Length: 384
Image 1: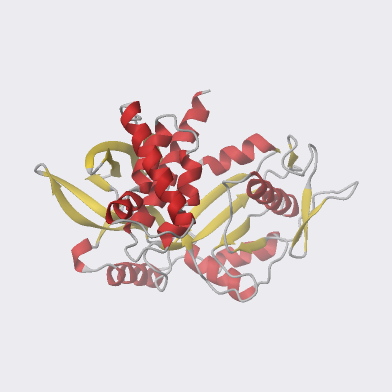
Image 2: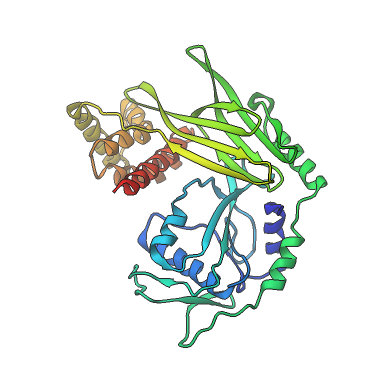
């Protein structure tokens, strides 16, 4: 089993960007341009490595190779994006890799590209790229293929050696457990479990009783042998169930107007461990959009817009307006879910101002709101 933290270190320490490896400070999958550039790199790495894995490391400064980290990313639509846009799409695996010296909410993103040994190309026009275009790696650049381009095995032995040198061992596993426990204060109840006498899973979460039932908040779950963070939540509350084969998380969100918040189930995640040394993660989306009175929502939406305009114009807010501002992530989220189509754009335009608040709770809520909207959109697209 590959220790993904060690793999990233080996990639950063021993290789410049090349035909089987690329690094990015971040990726943008919310814009068409960002998606197109990501597809280009996936296509190029797959075509340049027809018989071995290739990698993109996310959260690294390009010039210095310094690890900065990115937010935890749990969006499974990456594979669907690749499948819908590429002919002969490779298999894509996105994993969140923890590093002890990063802030708790930060990880390094690792994209593993598993090729099909067939030429990948664009299935349709996308941004400025045209249908049928294919790419390959020329040094550290992703370049359109030449006429007569032939898939060649150039990196197989090198990548196999790199992956072998990144294999897990007992020392790395034990260090991973100790790192996890040291990184989480006692109030987060850090613990570890062993499944199938092989998988070591560490988890932490702050206990919270609601109506006599036990929940956890600020939950962090990590598979130690691979150093992969499987789940992370900054604010949401979750329930946890554990049996001999599975670790089950059910996530809830609080939504409401004027502090009248109610709890809604969001998503159920089952991490299942098998006897053959493999595991899989299955998710079930549980969220049903709560409906609010349109007249009241219109009033809230108008209030938000007035406050946002004052913020943009750098006008002083009243105490009430400051409270309205702090609630932007929840109220704009509810408005967006209830048919106010510009509410998401309004919320995103407020993000820079939310980020500047001394109390970071509202900015964390903003990121959770965008995540929820992304999941709702993804589920809707799957149904049509």
